[in-house]
Length: 605
Image (cartoon, rainbow, N blue to C red):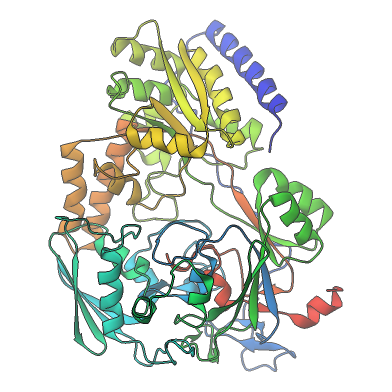
């Protein structure tokens, strides 16, 4: 974490720069000064895979040709992967609640993202960020071999034959069937903490087993995200857990009750979690199709509450993978040059304006506060250029939807270009010629955001805006946001896919719509995305909706530094992937990884 003195010094420089700017002659304000900085690229010091040479030549010992035609190290079975875990959330039905480390590797969804196109494969798609959407052409069958959209309201999933539940006393290794998928949908639509919960009178999905391996899902109304949510976020669970009256919050319930590559084996509360290999797992390595997954005998999650301890364990070789904050990266690179590291995408963080407040109900005010920040200076001086800000409402990785800053319409580009004079004029046009005052709430433990807001205060003072920073504990903070009693709120909101922001803002009653946007025209435009099968038309409509989000400035995009993932050299077949499926979170990609036990021994571990 940056020390507060650094932020205060920068604030002094900002103030001096603003004074000097006010004394300078007029300049051409049409030239953008706030274009995004090129994303810095960090690569490991060794290359995980090498291009294949002449495949007819004799291979070196321990090398094989993978399904992409590359010469790579031959994967090894055995060993244990050790990772950091935090406080556990056991109930797998609580979709999106986080910390369900067992769910990442024990329970599965209908479709996966195509791992062979990610960093460990061809590199066509970036899996190094936390988001929930990939285009259908970048997915492969998970528990469903394939799926068909029959019409705007109907989809059919063809369940993969031969997938067996784990060999426990509850399920006895029986086969997964369409009835299990129907049960999973029905049960989770009735469970209030599930993403699929359907309240009384709300539209839902009717699930029907057409035969042993075919499921039909039918909606009552179109929805842009409906099928993406269904095929990648519906966790498939067995009815036997409920029938046996087992406790969903008890870890013993999850001993051999999934379909995934690992099963819960042993737990010591607040100490460790051990997952052991499922010998009958159905999936084979897509890059080595003759190899049944997974490779390691076990994955051990070690409970470590603070990152200082986690980094110490990483340095000592006691953890194989650790996520590290930007500010800590340089130190680890210096002390442990043998470690490999991967740069993740910066999280989406911003100030969100409550539009039910009179001043923030006027988009000119929101736009003025957006124009007042010199994001590029903050990125250069605070983060040494290693940060981003223009990552919402769509990440650059979504090439068919993302619009580069330089290609934005002039009127929108102007809103996100630093110009304090235009910001003051826009406030005056909104009826605030002498500026205004407002309060931004932030969680008291988010010191990085508090420091960033301190810098923003200096910029706002230059346009006669007085922003008070009001800190609250997490429960109180979220209570204010849900109740709408705040004026503005700041925080890290995750990394968005092309639809998440619009999905939330289009629903006035959504629990994440803490801006309390209720715009009938915007909602209608969003819903139109769900009225077509054509992916090109969906992309065009999504771009239009996202332009509206940027124009309305419902949130003020802030610079954000990335995190880094450091790994031991003996952890193979892992190249920084964060997600390979929505249910399979930060640990799901480890089902493809393996341990080079010889190298580990050579390195004294």
